Image 1 (tube, rainbow, N blue to C red):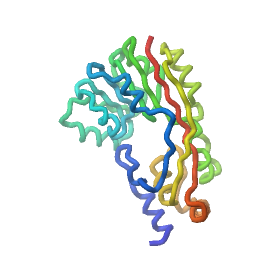
Image 2 (cartoon, helix red, strand yellow; image 1 turned 30 degrees about the vertical axis):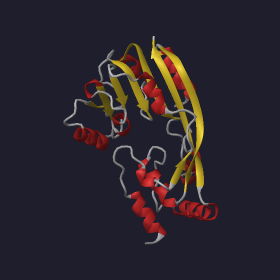
Image 3 (tube, rainbow, N blue to C red; image 1 turned 90 degrees about the vertical axis):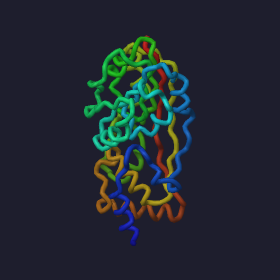
Image 4 (cartoon, rainbow, N blue to C red; image 1 turned 60 degrees about the horizontal axis):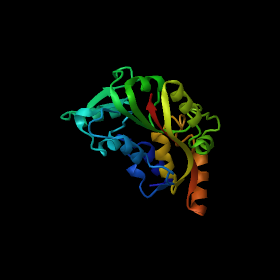
Length: 248
């Protein structure tokens, strides 16, 4: 199989849930200065009603082993929603379809803790779902995420979510009645060790690579392949921020 055929094959693979194990050994992500799991665990107690927003395939949510009857999840992407409905068909976990990512199907004043890892963030609606004294814990993808790679593959690319920044979100939460407990941002290196890994990544993250097609980007992909052959990898930067806030 030629390199180009291999790249085309990578572009045709689909991801189920939010699982990047296909790239194991083919990329490397620098650790963040905080641990999202620990931030969540600090607020997680068995008696708390929990909402996990945009839960993907439920992989991270399931790892907390919170009581099913006190766990509610939302998901807006139809393939993941179908996966969740099948996975938890015999579980007391409540799965709510949120196709518009506005939490409109979620009851207000219901939850003691809401978590959101890399999901859509309608701020006022999120606050409305919390009980007084409830906590919101989020890790977000910042507006400039992977800009250098996206722009290299598409010279007309514009930031998909330029206003998703720590300052903007923290102020919005504050104005909506939340008290900020913790906040931090970081730019961490993400390295790819082969072009096929880049192709796969660009295919499953279409909001950052909206026009990506292997044939259309062959000149750039061949340039990246040459660079990796001489340097061992190419790197881009992930833009991340986290906030822990309490509803007053």
